[in-house]
View (cartoon, helix red, strand yellow):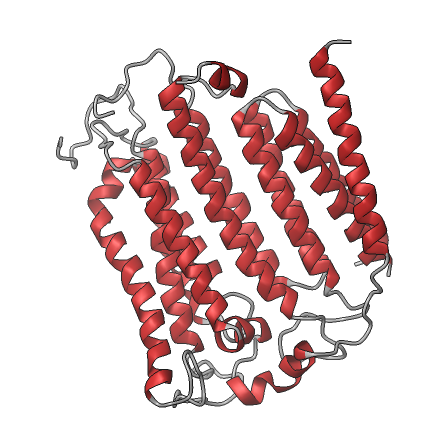
Length: 249
Length: 113
Length: 86
């Protein structure tokens, strides 16, 4: 048999051996039937200490909020890298999008999509959801807009500068909300101890700074993911005529 | 008990499939697909490690026992970070295609510069 | 969720991963990866994790698939005229 075939079989056997060693290691762990440690404390006292009903949101934005700040920085770095890779390319011609029926149909759907995204972001402390999920749905709505109407039309409607502004202000809002905690002496990104109102558990206006952090993260994630898509699609050329709304740069 | 064992076994098999795809495929898109498979397998492993038999989702009010909410927080972070670095890897693939006019790894290595 | 249903989901997870890894056509591999993401979201629901399932379904099978398709269509343009700002 040829050399590449032989190498493939060797690779396959090595991966199998690695998998067998993983299996032996995982069998040594015992499955937990009761929860001990910090997770038990979070489950018991998340409602009194943070005012949020969604325990995962309370962990992400109150107990471990510094990790969420790091994750927002990772998204920011990735968006900067992609925008830098495609910085010199400007689109000259963009498509005119799909047919008239699709455009009219999508124009009925898009307000409900945006409402759905806003609902997921704002109700993040009560039901499953939050800033990341709502931001991703909002970016998907922007991508749909770009596909159906053409990337030139989308760049005229929501300029790239506006997206940069929204993303940076989302990041700044996160850090400023944390600084309020430093100012009152309770620690960076503190929630109830920094003076945010706790409210009644289970109502919409509750949770202290968790809804504000959700909004900030939602702004950052939506603008970042939309910028990523726009940077990668603006190179595509089609043979149709220019879109009437786009200036030829 | 059985659900956790099934999840562990599936995660290990997916990890090995992803690793094999990254190592031994020539197309650059297959490399990115393999990266995505490896990340997804680790997410399945983390969430299954926090599963408690007969547990309910960690949203108050809970009737009975709740599953461990800490792995869910880690997994949310990991999904978003994985999506960002997949986007960056795809941007690199596009740039490589613009430079070398191909996405075949053997030809790129042979054409060196 | 019974163990039988969960074992079906795990079997199809492995099957779609194998298809995404071995098939020659890139478009079919990308679609198979998208199906894999949706099945993984179902598995997360079976593991009682609704937050994680929502995130996985939206990000992986919505955004990542569209980014893959954009990258795939960018690399099929050999022989056409390129941008002159390169």
